[in-house]
Image 1 (cartoon, rainbow, N blue to C red):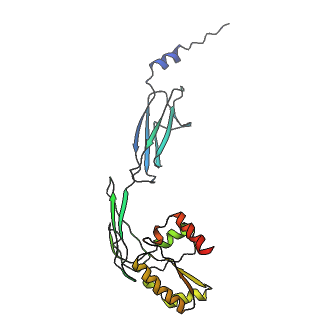
Image 2 (tube, rainbow, N blue to C red):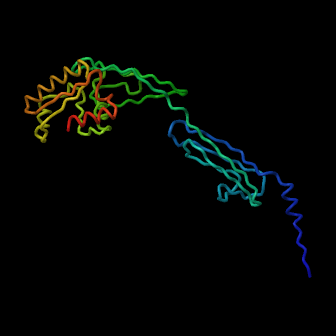
Image 3 (cartoon, helix red, strand yellow):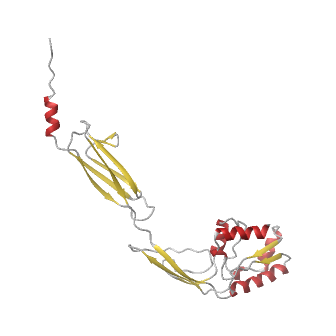
Length: 245
């Protein structure tokens, strides 16, 4: 006895079915490096259940959350092995363009430094300033006034390999008691590295005299028209070799 198996029913179903389609809704991250982007896929047509990127899903909708900016590959198939694929691109907003006009302190121990910040952004921006200096700042304002010399010089030197730099948090904070503590801790010499302008070098002269009074050897590094916070990597490495050759 011969059995005849007909495939006409399956063939008609394949021909008559609604094509498999995927509608994509996406939400881009709201800021650079944020992970609050989202992609939602709504699947229709074909023969459920559906498979999304190799995993069978319940229903016809998939949501991927907590996404950063980037390219995301999508592949959807049904039980008849019909499939569709594509790529969804999430983009983060363009980073703000930031520049600043910086006014250095004009005299030893002064507090007339300022920062005039300029921000170019397609979105509204907010500001959050912090400082370790013993001064009051307008934390949420774009610009700052009434500033003393800050910690940035030390951070720049450490980052570039001169890792025995110590921040004085404003030249006015240095006194003989603090220098004497360095001597007690075993320091034999201090190398003074302030801004190269008149205010910085006048302060360096005063500190050098204090260091000598407490028995510390002292040297002054004077760089014309620059300061420690502005030195590039190559200059810091050259300075280190000269100081400790």
